[in-house]
Image 1 (cartoon, rainbow, N blue to C red):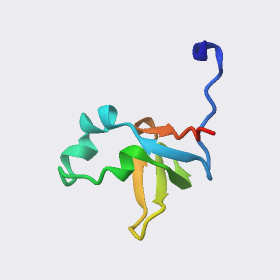
Image 2: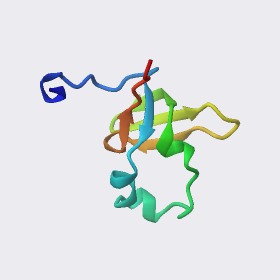
Image 3: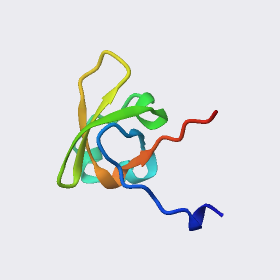
Image 4: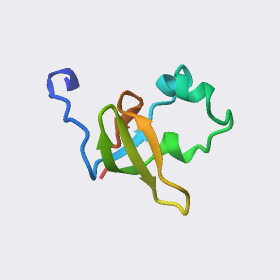
Length: 80
């Protein structure tokens, strides 16, 4: 059923999380610390800026903002 729902493009202000399966196989994962915090995979983070194929994400924690490739980012769905 969800296949018929069009996927919304990610934009500034979108709540997101990082798809671990996509991130783990990336060049960025090879260049980064192997022990990443779980909150980036659980979400939500907020997109602050998008430049070409990268998005700057801010987490709801006192940590620095991080740039991720857009294909590694998934929309965080708030369950009510």
